[in-house]
Image 1 (cartoon, rainbow, N blue to C red):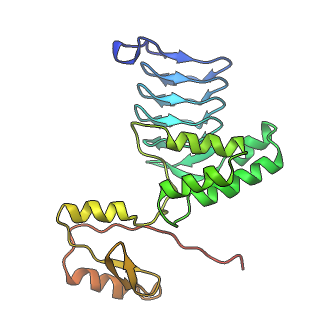
Image 2 (image 1 turned 90 degrees about the vertical axis):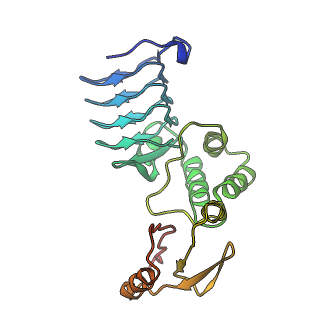
Length: 239
């Protein structure tokens, strides 16, 4: 089923050329689907969502209103997408998270190997834990300024949006902006770090031994936290 547009969305729902909408899929009001989009069975796209060209949704996916999914992205079956998915990305899960790039789709659509490898390098840079996301995006824009695929991703992230950006599960740093916002609301903060004791945006970070999580739990309990957040990721050697 496809709902017509409303006054709040320009009175227009758009479905591009050569799309495949399988049985029981649904496109809500004011959505914009590009060309060659595939909605498998029971996929539901809520109002005002924007779907790029060559996006594929596995069965029973649900897309939150106003979400953007970039061109050539792949959304795994049974996913609930409530954040914007970058072009060429692959996302999966209930509250979907990035699971890498849609490498199979890129190869099938004839993208050159060198372009794909460059995109992978930029992806690792943008979604690393060094600095802020804004800084990493700016660095990638400069370093890969002559690479169209990378610039597609950079432009997508930099453009204004109603929804947050879909990130890698368990990734990201405790960025200064987050700490400043928490401190501005009067929260007392304690940070545990896998690195040696250091200062994170003015907050003292206590060392955390991964082999002794009981010590970290005891430390946290000692000051009665009302909320615990985890950020960052483990980086294992190739060996």
